[in-house]
Each structure stands twice: as structure tokens, then as C-alpha cells.
Length: 254
Ligand code: 1GP
Image (cartoon, rainbow, N blue to C red; front, side, top):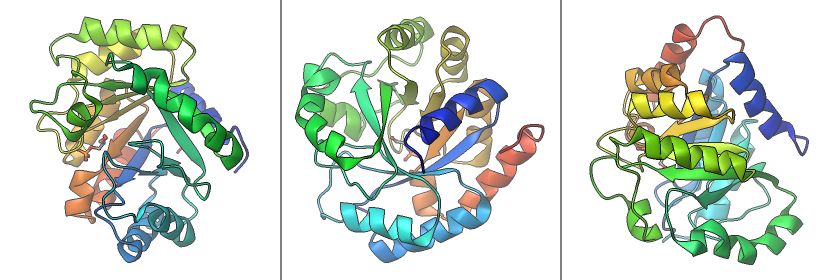
């Protein structure tokens, strides 16, 4: 994996319409053996990326989980850190998240300053990501832990302006997240609004509980969807999601 390849691939996906599927693995809920099985299954069905992270790591399985994912498949592993200590140089890249929907300076720049030296040493591909939390109907771990308010789901203009500002500030990816286990995913009209205004690759996740919701988010303009909870509960759904997405977007190469 070369230094720029993940960002390059996602930019290319944005341009060509190739849709990417990512599975989120919570190291607190996934032991190394299960992580290995999950990665092998993901590889067999054509998942594009494995994301690893959680708002809270209680069990200290983080590095073992990353290692198990890497050992079991060739799928790029991207860190999706809930905090500064979630850095592991066995992964391929890291979504360096700036929580631009919130007004908590620690999550806009503060933690990044602390993490920067370790990130530079790590050799990970750094993916500067504007992270936007969208109200998914109930408070989520992220909104609680980050001490920020999500963007109201019925305010696509706020999402659009936030995304635009993130792009103008030089961020390279956007991630609209309704939060893990959200009752409602990010609304389609909000995805469409952001997509139409911003040229960055767009990641959407949170509450995508079945293949139809995944396809709907991609149809609205997401370039990559992230599914965690639903696959944690029923790993076999990975295959259904991949089949549905590849069927809905047949013309574009993976
Ligand atoms: C959360 O977008 C991810 O940050 C995944 O959400 O667990 O609801 O799939 P789910």
C-alpha cells in the first residue's frame, strides 16, 4: 500500500461513481478470533475497507484487533479513532477526524496536536476528514462523548454549509455519521445537498441496518458507506449488502 493510495482511490471513486463498502469493527466488542473471521468473510464478499474504532475502548483489544484483521485479509484497514490513543501502525491509514459539526475545540484541533508526533512516526496514511455528526433520532455515544450537538436532521442547509467550510479549510474527505446504532440514518436529501455542493469523497454511516438503506445512501450521493452494528449482529448481512450495492451500481468498476 503506497502512501497516497487510499485517498487517491477514494477521489477516483468520487469521480467515476465506483461505490465503496466499509465495515466498522468495534474492538471492544470483537475479539481477535472474531475479527479474523470477519475479515476473511469481508474479503470473500468484496468489502473494500475495514474501519476500526470506537468511542470507548474498555477491553484494550485495539491493537490485537487490528493485527487480526490484517492477518486474515488484504483489505485495507483504516483507523477511525475515538481518541488519541487509538493509533496502531499495523493499519494502513487513519481518518484524522475534525469534528466540524461540533464546537468542541479539543476535537477540532486540540487532540490532533497531541497525536501529531505519534502519527508522523506511525507511517500511516493520514486522511484528513471533516466529520459531521447528524441527529439520528436519539443521543449516541459520539454526541455524548464528544460533548457536541449533532446537526438537526431536518437542516440540510447547515450540513451543506458545514461541508463547504470543511472543504475550504482543506479537509480531504467528509464523513456524515448518524452515530453507531442510530435509529434513523442520515436523510437522503441531506446527503444530496452535501453531494451537490462539495467535490470531496463522501462517506456516510450510522443506522444503515439493511442493504436497502445502504443502497439508498449511495444513491443519494455517498461514495462510501460504513456499516457496523448490523454486521456485528448478523455478519452474513455483509454479503447481502455487497450483492445489493454491486447490483444497484453495475456499470462502475469496483
Ligand atoms: C458509526 O457510521 C458508523 O460511526 C456505523 O454505524 O453501527 O449504526 O452501522 P452503525
